[in-house]
Length: 195
Image 1 (tube, rainbow, N blue to C red):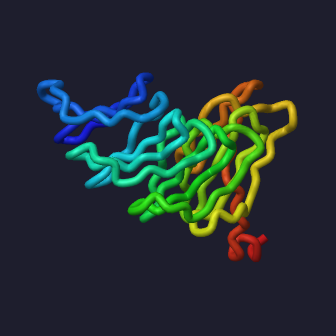
Image 2 (cartoon, rainbow, N blue to C red):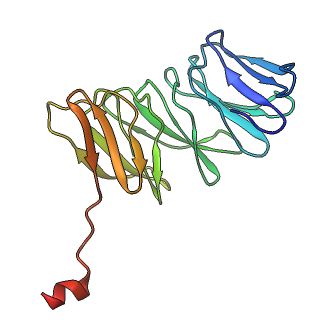
């Protein structure tokens, strides 16, 4: 990830680094206890990322000083996702964690049946989470983590890669090929009355 002042990246040695974009000179380095496989995300003050050590981190963009770290039960390999003043983090422990962006305190967590390797997809006031090798997408409310829906695939389908969401189409890579889903909208009442 790059900003005007720095390029941020993690590596298999467990370090998150910030480099000057023009020269490649190191600005800072933060060592974690596991490999960093996901790209970081940033707001105007902090860089957020997960590590193989099972922690999510918020680090000052300028100094590299850790603001907070929050423990999950296993490695974190998907990038965090912002929802207002919160951060969603998914872990190999099968949980989705909603953390306070300012403190890292846990607001809620929800368990799925399989490891989660793809970042949640935000859609309005909800988020969609696809567990790896699962046959469904779970939909949770951002506010309290309550599961409000599930998109179930046929049992012989397994999700094998991160889903994507574009132009109101959900695209899933499965062991049987691509599955594309579109939302079903209730019929417009004026249209229904004309028929």
